[in-house]
Image (cartoon, rainbow, N blue to C red; front, side, top):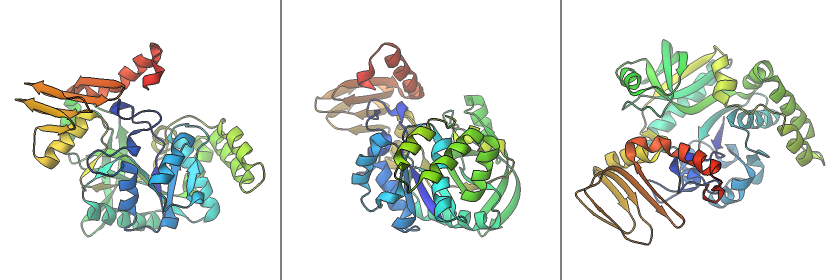
Amino acid sequence: MYAVIMAGGQGARLWPLSRQKKPKQLHSFAGDKPLVRETYERLTKKFADKDIIVSTTPEFVDEIKKMLPEICDENYIVEPKPMNTAPACGLVSKILNMRDPNSSVIFLPSDHMITENKKFLHILDYADQMIEKYPEHIITIGINPTRPDTGLGYIQMDSQIDNHNDLKTFSVKRFVEKPNLEKAEEYLHSWEYLWNAGMFVWKTRFILELFETNLPETYRALEAIAGAVGSENEAEVIKKEYLKVDKISIDYGIIEKTNNLLVIPGNFGWSDIGSWGTLLQVLSEMHETEVISKGNHIGINDANCLILAGEKLIATVGLSNTVIIDTPDALLVCNSEKSQDVKELLNKFKADGKHLYL
């Protein structure tokens, strides 16, 4: 099995720290290492360096290579241009299938936080066994929810089809979009629903069959790219053909169009750090404090606040449910419960021509 670190995302909701030129996976949040480095080190307990692949885009590849020097150049699979997760997964799967037609692969986001690594690797071992047992399926790893989260998608489980010791595998009934608070509360108290963590396992041969059926234009482009690998005009063909792919997520383009879906529920201290509010909640639980503060900050009588200060002093009095993020060229102040809306703020920047701040 190969492990693929998906490291091409933008992390728009974590502006102003996460930017187009340096997104959240290249920053450290809960520890002293960038998230992409933490993801790599977590995987080395199961995978050799030769079996770890990095999927990214041209603007990030040099920085990631500095952070992950152990990964050889041929294991960096670089999209010519960001085209969403379906083409990225297809390109990686096609190249790995050329290396080994029977290969299986697990795709993992580079910007998630996991605190219980042994439990996580235990599930990866089980997923490895399951994909050999059920090769004509896609397997996803879902997270047992711990709170009613409206910023995450959900997976509804169906019947149990397999188990091994403390782990189980279920068929998937459906994927659910980000719910409102009432629905999220309902899902929290139902055994059927898991958070969708964006972790997928499949046989490269099988996923390429699904591309041929569901995204034929992307499949034809991948075939053309494969035919050019190793030739003198490889780079030119990849650049040209990649413009023909469908710009769509792997969830919408492939996964939600097949019935051959399995899910393994997991509980290993997972968080996607998808917003400042989520980060505040995660760090508050980790450090058992209501106020998370870093940098030059002094506050009194604050509650449920995240303050990341820069060089100048930030002084706060009596704040609650507040996020303050100070960077050299931008300052964000927002309600922690509205931090998902930071992405909309970036859309306003674009509309107002303030591209320098993106």
